[in-house]
Image (cartoon, rainbow over all chains, first blue to last red; front, side):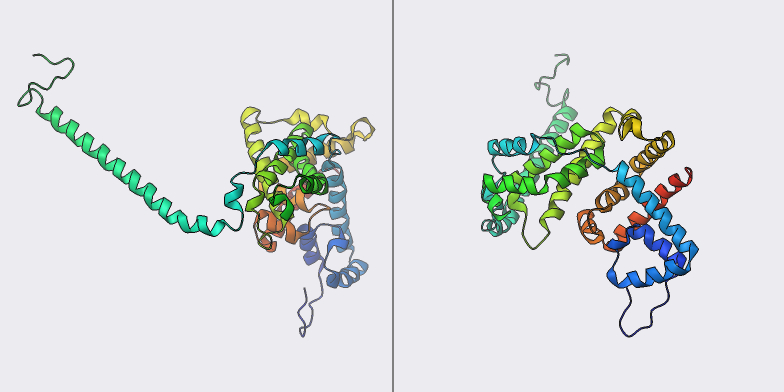
Length: 152
Length: 169
């Protein structure tokens, strides 16, 4: 779009072709401010007219390719009926009045969860260490520690 | 939508009747399968109903949010379908205007349909949203990109599709 106070560079056929790729061949969807300039270019440039014709051809093929069938007759009623059997998820939580409270509690919950997980990891590591020590000393000082397959 | 957030079934019915055409068309254009389009449209609105509380007025337009839900569901369905049946050329070939179209027109339609299906997802979605439909600005919001990025996606898609047309003069 042209900025006020600056002279507008004339639109060239190559620029127009690039714009057609970005905006499509339906000039009614283009910014109103640019249409007069496009009209002038189309009146003077065969290259621009060919570019527009190619874009319009693509649009008309897409009209066919992207044509969708009508919505099945019973679908709206089916959707509403299904909704009546479904409760909104966490409706009490997502309601805007409760959201700040939920957000405020999130770090607390995260801290609690992290503490639990780290604690579990420590226990697991301690148990693992205990197993390694028992196995290392088995058959020497810990002869009474029974291991399947070991000789008495 | 405020009424839907308060679980008003009548308001939900109005919302469905107002937006179902657009979402069903979007899902059909994306999947090219009538049954899938109906299922995906239904699931989109059920997600809206279930998650109505998470939409915040003023943050994102309702239609943008709605299309984002539909797009995500379409992408998931497309992935599942690709895993099950890698290429569904027969459907593309058997779908469309039928015996009234001239053979060369029919060939062109199939070629463009295939080229469209082969586009990267974001390029295909940009074309599906913008062709005689959403403004570039609204489509950019659905894809969560700038207008410039959206137009770049459109330009790359249209160049690919025009090159297919060039083979059918």
